Image 1 (cartoon, one colour):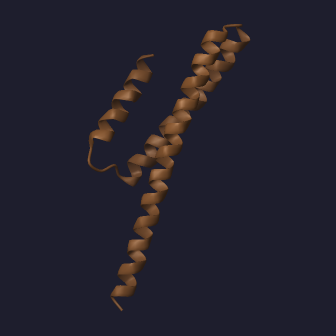
Image 2 (spheres, helix red, strand yellow; image 1 turned 60 degrees about the vertical axis):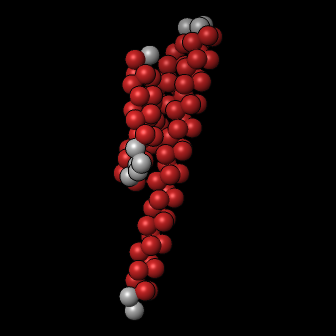
Image 3 (cartoon, helix red, strand yellow; image 1 turned 60 degrees about the horizontal axis):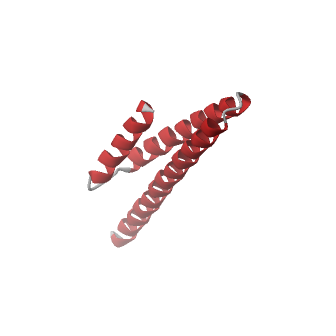
Length: 95
């Protein structure tokens, strides 16, 4: 549970910043995908142990982390597309 609180605090801190870089987006996406995989593993263990409450809780946490990871990955992809577009425009403007 402490890890969830840490992730939430880091997430809130980054949202407070005016700008999140492409590298930060990629790093956060990777972190959340790893956390989602971990939570899925814990959900499987809980299911095998017959603990349905923990199975559902871990499944929800996995789903939430997967959504955050996808969101950060999309932010990085959009920002990268914008940079490529800006680079192409600056090359044609200089000619």
